[in-house]
Length: 311
View (cartoon, rainbow, N blue to C red):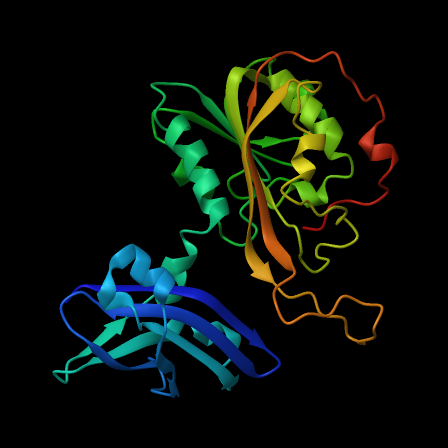
């Protein structure tokens, strides 16, 4: 039974769940929809059958009334979200369960598409060297497997640990790696922790080959973490200040994703309050080195920071 579905939003805040999306069956009619926690069988009844002209425009008349919404109490712990199943009841009595429906919808987020642009190009190379900044597997995440086996992967981190091949400060990469050695460079959730990301951009220019690609994903909105080594947040437009013709790069793509609410603990008229997401959890950029740069930034990062990055 072919089911088409997508989650537009899924927000849990202070014991309440708000969600919206759509689902329809290619060969049948859905008459009811609800969420079920697979481990406890708790059920959340969705308001199904809302008008969906935008979906029908793409999928046809059958998808004209396929939206669902819910806003109400939510008593499950946040980690239980991974066990929530979308249940769809058809007119013939058949019940279809869609597992991982939230995660599958998020895979299509813009920043994931930006990374796909990087990985599809890099992994299509017959040979080469790919460097990951911030490679230490602090949370068990090892991204070495994302790089094709014919390529040489070098995991770089400021501290030694699992998945680290080279201990080096990103602000001094060129002191540890040969000039023009990298066909690709990428990092996940690192640039917010760099005291001088503009200096790191210049270091990347030194170690990347002309034509090499780079990918960075970090945050536009996110709580302070790994303090005191948490310095920056980036919009999709901020990357122009780091990767430009003057620093020797061109930007191929940049996106933000994962809409988020920014809510002050104390509300007042002079603070931004709204009922729609007004921030984004993630910001990503895909860039290419196009030329060498004469820019330099001689300030020693270590002179500005008197403490080690948290282990």
